[in-house]
Image 1: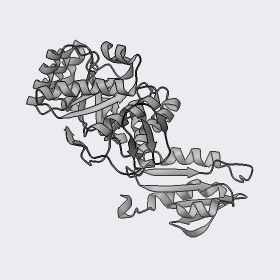
Image 2: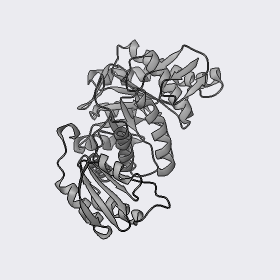
Image 3: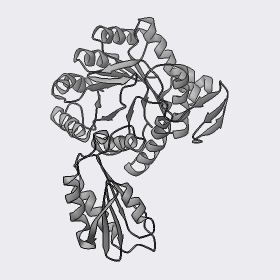
Image 4: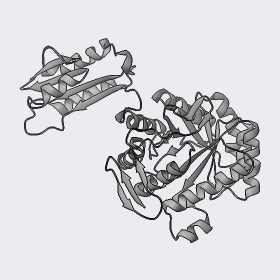
Length: 379
């Protein structure tokens, strides 16, 4: 197969049908309801995270969920990995401001307990959940309560026979594993399915999702599994998730970081914003700096980040540190500063407002943000 990506993001050769993707054309899928959140079928792309507490710590878990909700999270996943977690999940569901996804591995009984607790979705890893009969039990219970299932395939936990067949994790192997369990769902008439085919290898993850996208109409949950620390994980997730979203693939996302859940949400929201798939809050733009820099741009931007943190207003701010590109780029932002030799020219929606001293730049921008009224199209 030759993968032809019209935005020239990836080119690869393997076996299979010819795939062509168009930038900005959203893939059409069936729609699944996760609590009150629509996934697929043209619905806005939702952002997910996962709690990092012990699930048996109900207060701590709910506190993380509330913080994630404040950051703009849509759906949150909670592990149900032992008896104590299974006993706690009902209370977490009751207190959560967000739809809860129960993350299940190895023990189908915990999945049944999660269904009883009225979770919004159950995530199953087909490589470790057990026999077909056990999966059928979970599916029938979920179908009775209209609870969807995410089939979560990971390159690190493929079924042994599929791994033996392909020799090592491949895109076809991930696709085959997912489709095997879609087939099991269809045996009992269950169609409220979402698929993920994650890998720590970004290229493998991209190729696997493309296969599922080309061959099915099932909504896709995007993610790079075990992406890593905040710096590395943000980069890997942005490349993998961003590439697919730019091709119109993906209906809900989760950025996996070795960090707090709300940090994952923050990065996920920014990926969507960078592609015009979500409205922005405050967006800070600054030049990369060079020898032409004539103000303390590092200090200005650090102070702005601190003082504007938490402001939920779609406003683009550009602060440029020299007179070469500064005037043009500052005039394109909602609020802009083109600085040079200890002063800055303040722009508001493309119009020059006044000169400000370097020492006043932060205060002036903060005041401009407070008074800024976004257009309806930005809201």
